Length: 419
Image (cartoon, rainbow, N blue to C red; front, side, top):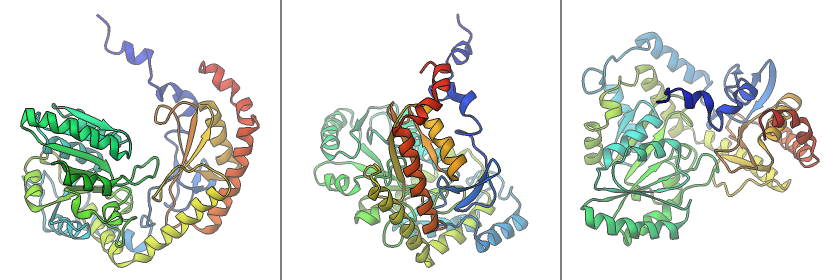
């Protein structure tokens, strides 16, 4: 019999095998200073394109004031215990009511974390007799939630209505045998590619199939729609989303999340969400802070307007210079390049050290081998000068990638890793 750790010691995983070359710089980097468009990385000033602070709320004085006052009044512990036992307050209820109204739903329930909460919502909504049909490119929290499901599940080709319809036909036949129902899952915005989910097309299929729709709108909440209510509002189908989930960790620049739906569904989830029933209540400092942030989303549309001014300048500038940014329809801005992982390391080091640009790097196994994805997140705090400097830097690194400079620089790393 093998020792449980033998496999772990022999195989660090597709990302872990790069730890000695990557950790502390390419992964687990330390950005320092106030959260903003420009921060410090290893002592150098860099333009930061990897902070999900879409509306620029994180370091605003009025936000920090509310956070500080809440911390001084309540500390980080209050309320103690799970909501059902001893951790319930009127402010939790107020935040739920305001979140529900903001996303045009009857009711909402707070979640401590988006990732944890989404897994638990999936687990609570389905039984072994039900069938899940979900977009193959869904976020890891959805994949992990689906793994908890003891019944059948099918994936449909990313954002492909024909594939979805085909799988709904399969799911319908199976549900007729099991006596269960069907849950379709998509994202409002897919966080790597930046594409909105095909929510309008999915909702239209309700005329033909009997299913419920669950949407993770982490990147759409606060950034899309006339009032910021998300991708469903943007596409005119918010009422067709049966269960809506968003996080406070992006546009709200905080911690926590919420799920919104009809009152009866939220009442059910309150008593069946294991991740909330058996976890400490969201601390008051985050609840009071979220109330302030949500108020700013409602009352200061200029924040979203500035976000989109910067987004359009960045994306249009990249396209004009011939960069491939895929088919993004959100603020998420992917830039696709061709190259190996060692070349990606050399490219990003050049970008950070010589051009003062910090963005996230995504490589295999998150995307196919041979591709490099540089992921940029515009915010309301960026400036048009930031955009111009970034466009100049990206033109320079593309030229070095194409002329083989990074391949030569990365040869030693590639040899050491057997690439």
